[in-house]
Length: 171
Picture 1 (cartoon, rainbow, N blue to C red):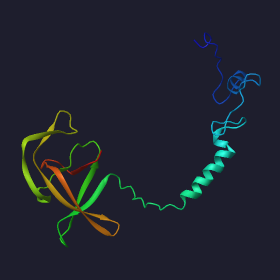
Picture 2: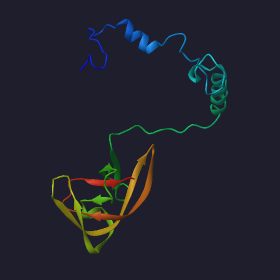
Picture 3: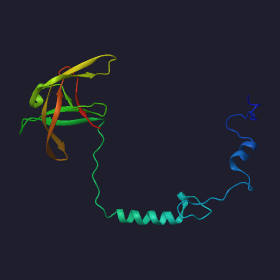
């Protein structure tokens, strides 16, 4: 098949004159480069002097803007406390973008809890298996952000005692 399409075998790590010619083009057929940023010939946009000057001015302007302090990535686990006053206890939540609802496995975490009119069947990772949520309610949390405790109320949290860990749904 190689001969049919005109490719000759060349040992790995080497190139033939035909390979070089195929990729470099000849002087007659080579088009002149035109920068899309300034429309001048002879360079590409990534090497454009006009674009570099413009980028430098934009960067100088943006240096005066306030900067956000970004949180460190924690591997998808959210650490929060529940309770009131000094009686906080740590509760781990796994942040789950594949979860459609917040789900908790500990009834004592709920501030209020009501039975669902129709239980919700939740598919789990084991093929063909599911668990049921029969209650929904509100969980009050305290998130440790920097050196502050932030009071958070999470509504419509499903209670599923058979769940191995608490899941915090994100979209």
